[in-house]
Length: 109
Image (cartoon, rainbow, N blue to C red; front, side, top):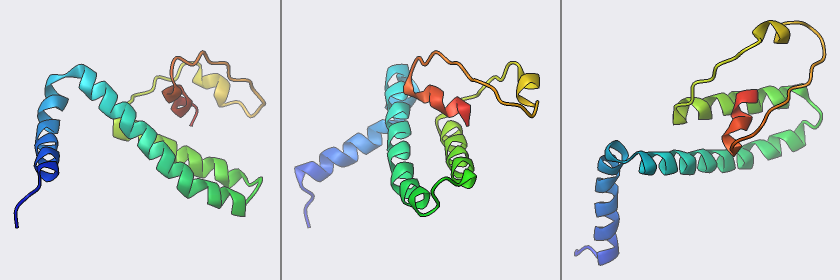
């Protein structure tokens, strides 16, 4: 059985991925963004039906938060929390953020 040109090109691209990832910061950035959006879409497909089954349940937020923490770990984001003492108080608060990208939402989980 002979391989088609499409299969050969696909195998060549897959073999190039580790080289491009190590040598190009721009490629690494775009690959991580692609990975972030792919995981986010898959999580939405999984979580939205669960949220519909349990509407207005606080556990939904905790479940989504766990997924977001995993995404941060996979794409290599390290978060720095300032003012932790304010969050430890058992009182209402408002979080204000200046979103620079869609990844900032992961920091709220």
